[in-house]
Length: 592
Image 1 (cartoon, rainbow, N blue to C red):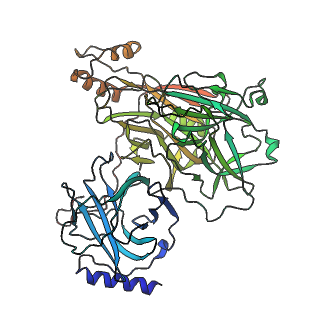
Image 2 (cartoon, one colour; image 1 turned 135 degrees about the vertical axis):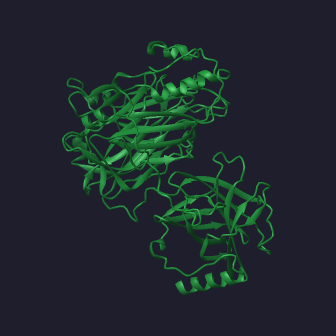
């Protein structure tokens, strides 16, 4: 089979008159493409892929005997297909062709001077055309988009015709095309087969009735699962969302929380209890700060790495759990009349225990009015720190953990999220950075390699927002029209630290006359600012926010104190992190 593939490649290189220089390579780690996603709703366009530290291989199948196109769009909002780079391939007279193009501003496709897509194989049959191709993550070509660890906006397109002249501009768009936002690097890899002894457990609402009186509702259901019901310790190795068919589009995010009650409160008395939660804070939630699983819109099932799993049924594990679901009820009259929901989270359990118990650490900005974002801002930046005092408190004497995966979350105005660790004033390589974040396509990304967090470190979550469509101040909160900036870190071994959320005190705020505003009056003062016209206060607020003290609230189900609070100045970064350069201009010896 490999000889046939190589023959196809060499013929392709000759026929394209050196447009694309291709040489035969060993398939190596690319022999199997474990990741698979449909690119459109009918499942007629299928993408498979695999990647290494430097390269990525795609296999795309489309229902056409003509041109097949796969590319990457730079515009995160997809308002225009320009700029984008795209590989076009087709099968004609038994030969397979592939060429690297980019989209011009007038919408035409032009062949690239530098051909960076490598054809591996291809065929067509009565169902359509399938092409397998490979490229560098960063081709060092200004006409090509870099494939990053965050969200990538993929473009797919196909036509019923083949290409006659490679050098003539091709009219675009094609009759059939679309886009799909995916995380290509860091997706959790499903095992080839789950162990025979696995079982599933559903934490789902029992016809929870959410109201239509508001565009946002939080529903909670409590579950008492005694340890003896498990009959011993299990590891959860996978979690996923399950939905009522009518309600999937109404659910914004879901958390499964673990609880430990004080003496005198029996968990069985709360089993099956349902209530409105979050903004109407139920007293039970104060004992349920352990976020075991986090799911957001668009998130695929998450498989834990093979060396770790979440402990259930063990001697120190929770026996009371709460499923929290955030419902967004459309105000356009298109919502369902059925208000009874039985959606939730499904976990897959195994008795074959893995080496480590997994834990989660919930970090970022406390959802509160102190998280204030002015209107009319295309790129407004906020940050929240988890200070080293909190991390030291939770890590204890054996003060290191391995962070294996990261979940990030904002609401609709979030455009970029970064999670970083600061150690002795040095900014370390980022745990997560998605410059194309979309709340409609959320994910948990595996870290390769894993990151060692140790005592003395602090964690910072940074979020950027676009509020150009808003006319009033946006505040942090639980409603969909409010904003969030949080991250859930999946780590091992499990420690006694569950959440670390912070908020600014606004203690450096000055008015437009440069007079200091006392912190206790800051929010009232900011609510009176004419943000659209007062450029001086916009500038003053940005400066004050970057300099503000913060207060953190850290919680643990296992430590005697349970909660500590700490006011601090965010640590100053003396040595910022710079990603390694992969592309150097040989003449100027400068990064691209």
